[in-house]
Length: 137
Image (cartoon, rainbow, N blue to C red; front, side, top):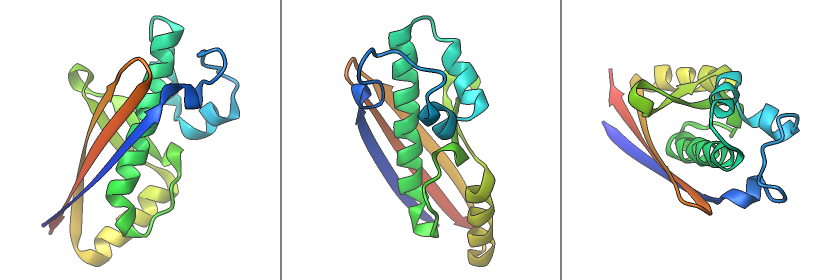
């Protein structure tokens, strides 16, 4: 068994610099976030909360990537989905090419993986910490 971690902190205005509003047509939003993430973001009650939602999820994607980066993966933000799970607890879903590469790596190593992430934000900053547990099968 081995445990790896990743953290990320992000100034929210870095993603939404001018108006603090989420531009749904922004190529970054479409490229970095899955449809489910965008839908959950739309459900937030106001623009400030939407910006915080996306910023903390992007920090979560970065933290997860850092925790699993030893697997020889590239960072594809949309392949790491951070969605609200049971009782609002964030859940991680790995998709696309990242999932295929990760599955191959895990099969070669004879391991299985579980990932846990914690997200938090404050008025100006979003922070995330991820823990990856690799266990021999």
